[in-house]
Image 1 (cartoon, rainbow, N blue to C red):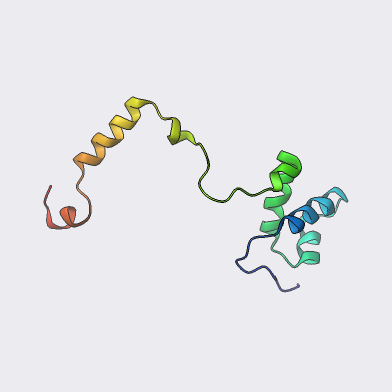
Image 2 (tube, helix red, strand yellow; image 1 turned 180 degrees about the vertical axis):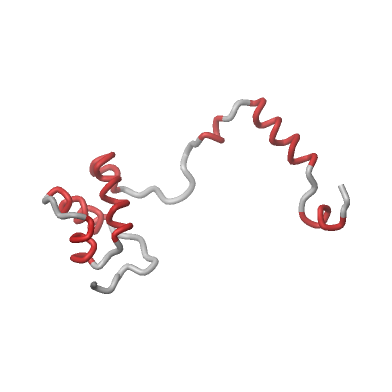
Length: 99
């Protein structure tokens, strides 16, 4: 099998589009991975994003998502979490038996 060239660098948009184009040509994940010297997992990830969201799915958004399930939690849930945190010492307090 060919050596994977990617390392830890993110794929470029051009590489992600190439994965999508090859998938549209009915190449399977292994064929794409070998041709582009990528892992099958990386190919599968971007192929799935292209399938689910089209070309827009190939764009990356760096950083924290704008919203998420905890960003819109009910006030009662936030209060319960804060209460639980306050009742459980952390760090140095927990190690020394202080609260």
